[in-house]
Amino acid sequence: MTFLLDVKGLNVRFRTEFGLVHAVNEVSFSVSKGETLAVVGESGSGKSVTALALMRLLDRTALIDGEASFEGVNLFTMSEKEMQKIRGARIGMIFQDPMTALNPVFTVGDQIAEVVLIHRDCTKQEAKTRAIEMMGLVGIPDSRRRVDQYPHEFSGGMRQRAMIAMAIANSPSLLIADEPTTALDVTVQAQVMEVIRSVQESIGLTVMLITHDLGLVAGFADRIQVMYAGQLVETAERDRIFYETRNPYTRALLDSIPSQLGVPGTELKTIGGNPPSLLSPPPGCLFQPRCVHATEDCRMTRPELKSVGQNHLSRCLRSSDLGVLR
Image (cartoon, rainbow, N blue to C red; front, side):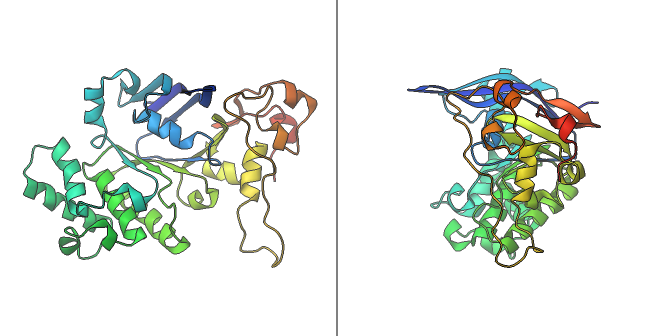
């Protein structure tokens, strides 16, 4: 099978005065054309670092190795000039926090049009017309008037729609959405996700969605991959993750989702403890200090990512004897 994006053995380290921080470790995954892959996990699990590494947007303290084949070309061996032709044109990205991602001194329309001018041979008026078209596509009302407004004149939800318009302005093949609903209320979150789905269907996008919220991707993703402490710990089709998970960390994430059927007055479930230090990871399974199923073997042996079913991988020494975790 030919994948739009095929990542193999991605490692990301950050040089600090205290040593190397192991932010992403031997992560491999692929995304097919038209597919929606959700990458989930707690803050600090390596989700955003993975995306920024693929876009080559990490600072000079980052050490990256591995292979990332996009449309048949390795992103990590391209020159910066070649990469600039990919960013914003073939790969679009929605960055975290729409409240600060837009430049407050330029109009929203100018910022969207700038992306078009960089990658297309067109006039400023043509770029502005494209900006108006994109703003309309993502559901910003009265886009011909609002194209000349500034970010402070937009609500949080409208700013996020503008960020989506900017990311898709050049009809990319792949859209990386990094926490696209951060700081938005639940109603606006649903609207933003519906906008992404609508745009995906309109222009045939492939989507890589990064989030800490498994509930958010329940009706959106085709496949889900779960990350913890820089490692990929489970990956499978969406329904298998929700109903047939074989990994204790994924199960803990699922249990922490608030339920509408919960008994009033009962406490929300949480994952006890804290993630391990990425500066000096402990031996054994990285999740074992927080895992209710951990054994002595888990404290001594680092588990490999192994098949536990059709297109279903899990990183757990006890995947076989624990079976499906409910």
